[in-house]
Image (cartoon, rainbow, N blue to C red; front, side, top):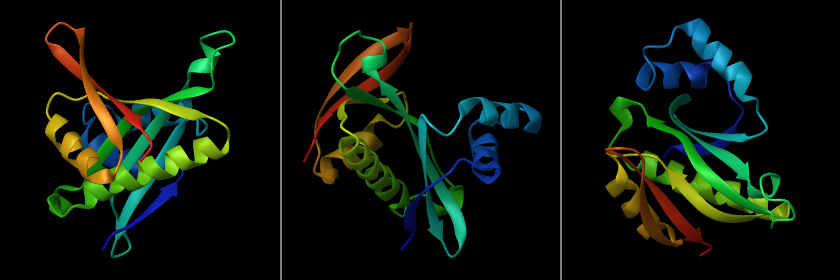
Amino acid sequence: MAEIRETEASKRLYAIQRRNLYPFLSKEEMEGWMEDEGPLRIRWFKAIEGGKTVALAAWEVYDIHQYVEGGPRIIILDLYTMEVEEEFRGQGIGGRLFVESLKQTIESLEEAGFAVGALQIETDTARGFYEKVLDKSGFNWKLETREMVKGHPFYVFWVTRF
């Protein structure tokens, strides 16, 4: 069974992301992006099977308080990336990584005095995967569909604790 753990951004994680999601970026462009991201607003997780990183997920943390003067300390989590190496797909690794990374991220934010108000997942192909995983996770949730660009939906999953 794959081990799930939090990690820091690394060239290896960005190489996986570049190969699977952004093959049009050069190595230099991807490394520049990595440097611009910074470690503070993105929480990285990886799944390890047989000593090899086989999947990664990252949550981007938005503090609503910084945008609304005097607002509550509420966080919006955006699924920044989620990728499972092709030969490890269909084994439940992605679902476990999603749920465990989400739980760990929420717990650490709550310990710091924040509340998570929503999860934002931008996808037009994996909606069913996230619905299925959230159903099994123990989280309460509802789905809101929005259209940012005409013809390109994205989904906001409003989630409450267990």
